Length: 216
Image 1: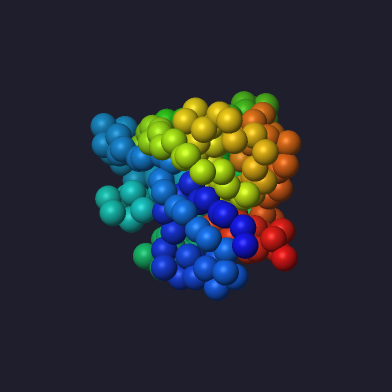
Image 2 (image 1 turned 90 degrees about the vertical axis):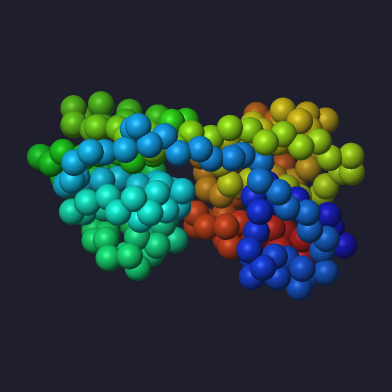
């Protein structure tokens, strides 16, 4: 039986994906989110890029007016679609989405709705292609440090911020197997540990499934 730690609180159904395997599970939120309402768009947007479910939830809660959405992750896109938003393009990774947008929508203007700690992947692509991109930082993330006395076999990571938060409080845990949500998070994990793998889809469930597969 392996000891698994999730750096994000899991729903009951997500927990069952792990607990049904007889492995032990601890889960907590390594980061916390604070909305930045002063940065919310004050006018309707034509084309908006959304890369996280956190952003999607703010869009829905605030009823932002957006004509078309371009999303990273099926879960994010599904959440927005279920609330009446028109999603015209979905990719698993930000780099894929930025490439397709700059190739196929070069004459359009875009807004990026994101965290204040967003990665440079999409903005850098737009700069390289000389395309207009307006950023709205809807929220910020901060660390929720928690030190663990016991070691874990596998730790699940869902963002670069979560990785930094975990290792700031648990720097000695360098022998863990890190399972990450996508390649970007995996690259950050490699700064801290040697054993790193990642899910092929950017969802919490896909990270859990990947961990279960490794432990068989």
